[in-house]
Length: 327
Image 1 (cartoon, helix red, strand yellow):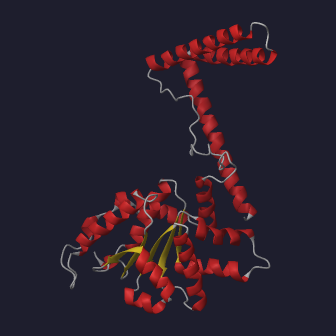
Image 2 (image 1 turned 90 degrees about the horizontal axis):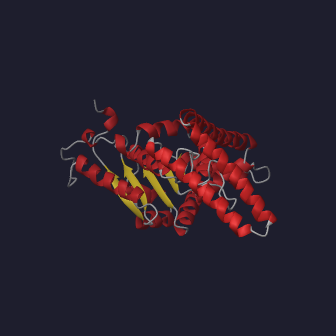
Image 3 (image 1 turned 135 degrees about the vertical axis):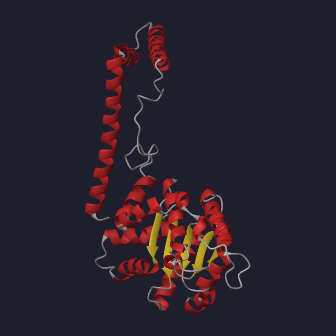
């Protein structure tokens, strides 16, 4: 990993922990000022706990009696403190550290030494320069979805209107997120430009990131660039190139936008199949969007890719008038 990237992320996590500790200190100071007895209780509990540890370590003749006595004292002090909190409507967990991530406690790592998902997502955001996308996800998510911008008039020979079609697609995408850990489906969005495919990709990305999933969102062209950097710079490949490539296979969800805009040849076909096949084999999900029709996809990509996508992806067809040209 690029050391500057890791250093920046480590610093961010240190700041998170320091902020959580400082916030706790401020909360304690506020309560101690209003209720001095709470501070006295906390000091008594601390001193009594030290005495308890010494007795257990030294093991005098009456160790059991002394241990019971000190434990009862600590228990009574805690009950008194709890009653003060209750009488004054102070939340029970007011003196607990409030971490951004309760799983890793803002360290970035789990107890077994592995990276926490929040840490992985921080790396992904740094590696793939997702700051602009992150801002976009705040505007384009399920809560901001407006079904009324889609026409309720028949479109061509389609059996239902674009609005009715989007109701179905919206429900399918919500179900995809709600059952992300239960089902093994990936999704293909296809149709013309300006019909909501990218918006729906953003909705899914936003929802799953909020749920703690690691999400990579890249155009097909950018993904090919990542693969080429990994494949053709083996002798002097940087760690950051390795991480870029590895995350294509390891992230919880890979979103490939604008499939069909990348330079297409036997190499790109082979590498795309490798990514799709590896993720499908390991149960990792994908969302792919393209402006190409199903016939165009079939004529552009290898039979192996088409077989995987057509047989194992839920296919959503977007149609209607280009919304970007609507007033």
